[in-house]
Length: 262
Ligand SMILES: Nc1ncnc2c1ncn2[C@@H]1O[C@H](COP(=O)(O)OP(=O)(O)O)[C@@H](O)[C@H]1O
Ligand SMILES: [Mg+2]
Image (cartoon, protein in one colour):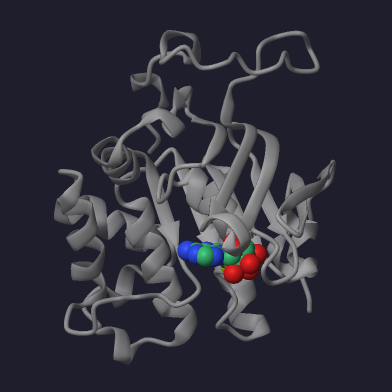
């Protein structure tokens, strides 16, 4: 389902830095590269340093969990990667493009064409069916055909539920509709901010299973959470505290979503 081959190589774009060589000496393509990325809200005494000089490299196809207590800068980091906001300093490169240099229109196009978002609260339009919710967003990218949207619903296990309204779906099903909505446009990056935060354990596991499956198809997935248990299913765990990345750990044997417990 991915269209990775349509994108130009990293070196051809915007003078962005080359990713570091991989373990085999070959250049591993980075999905996301941060160099000294910082975000400060406000000025002077009122300044809040939400993110401080973050360096991070996420190879394509990984499932990354960003872990940290409330207020540690997780959402800020995800929003910089997703082009919701620009950094106040440093560089954010995604898919070989330096998105920190884009203006507002550029960021809008980047978000629309490249990034799928999933949030804690599913934010479905209550007056539209599940399928219509998926199509609504896919249409913005010119990929709103019925078949593609139905396929996205099928990918999250909801092929039979497309005609239901959000109020006729459980919380877990609503979050899966939100995931279908995010992937219908076939984004290079799937960014999830506390995707299980409003769900109970069993339902949350079902959502994590869907995210792990989508990652298994080669999609780069980043999941922000304050729930340390979710880290066990990641290829890479990024720990944050007080606006800083304090640890990045590789996990050689990610656990299946079913084994995540909290
Ligand atoms: N738009 C904003 N204006 C001012 N401060 C903000 C804004 N967004 C986030 N912050 C602050 O930045 C810090 C990090 O927030 P956030 O990235 O949302 O943390 P997390 O997602 O880990 O809970 C917090 O102190 C928060 O209050
Ligand atoms: Mg947050």
